[in-house]
Length: 77
Image (cartoon, rainbow, N blue to C red; front, side):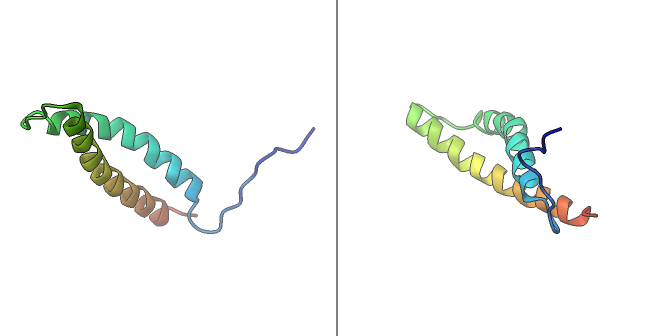
């Protein structure tokens, strides 16, 4: 039986898991959050919409990344 191509033995927090989980949660939480938060704003052009999505998405990503890292740090073996 051949050995797996990639293996991991993290010391402490598994940063691969943190990055993958943050990515998935940012899509699942960020898209609806941007859509809901954009309702009260007048966004007349695609540039304004993109700028709004980037600004709100960055905050969502930062909050989720810190939360996921804190969860992983708290629950490490």
